[in-house]
Image 1 (cartoon, helix red, strand yellow):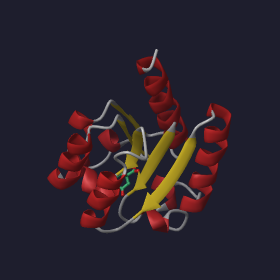
Image 2 (cartoon, rainbow, N blue to C red):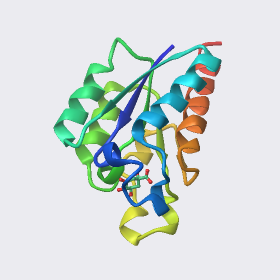
Image 3 (tube, protein in one colour):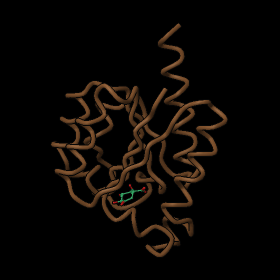
Image 4 (cartoon, protein in one colour):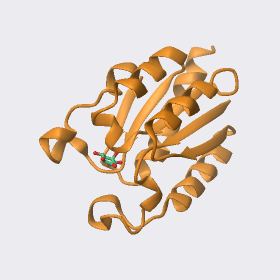
Amino acid sequence: ISILVVHGPNLNLLGQREPGIYGSLSLADINRLLELEATKLQVGVFPVQSNHEGVLVDKIHSALGDYQGILINAGAYTHTSVALRDAIAGVNLPTVEVHLSNIYRREEFRHHSYIAPVAIGQISGFGAQSYVLGLQALVHHLREKSV
Ligand code: DQA
């Protein structure tokens, strides 16, 4: 099993960006946590990050054929991007949505996700652990499906 991990806009700044909300780990630290968990689960994880909506759309398209699932933190595009949602629906790969912060206890504009209706599920509010839990959930889903 190979999983494409998609990090959206501003997540390259993790560690220095609003640490009270997003924590002190860098994106590289989060990718290392995911790598550790992937080793335990005996799957591969392949992280990509972009601040550009179209680049993210291209990355999602390129998952077809090479990956069995997508783990995505779309950042602010969660709340704005029909294009990312359509890309996920278009490739039709099982997708889990994650957020470091609990988007439902923050500003109203973060309460709506365009990604949620095309995802298997969403994990929000557990900091870096959201990614680890999301990976576990996605791999569990993929393994259940194949038996
Ligand atoms: C985020 C939540 C979004 O509302 C925000 O725009 C982000 C990060 C999170 O991981 O908590 O960039 O996706």
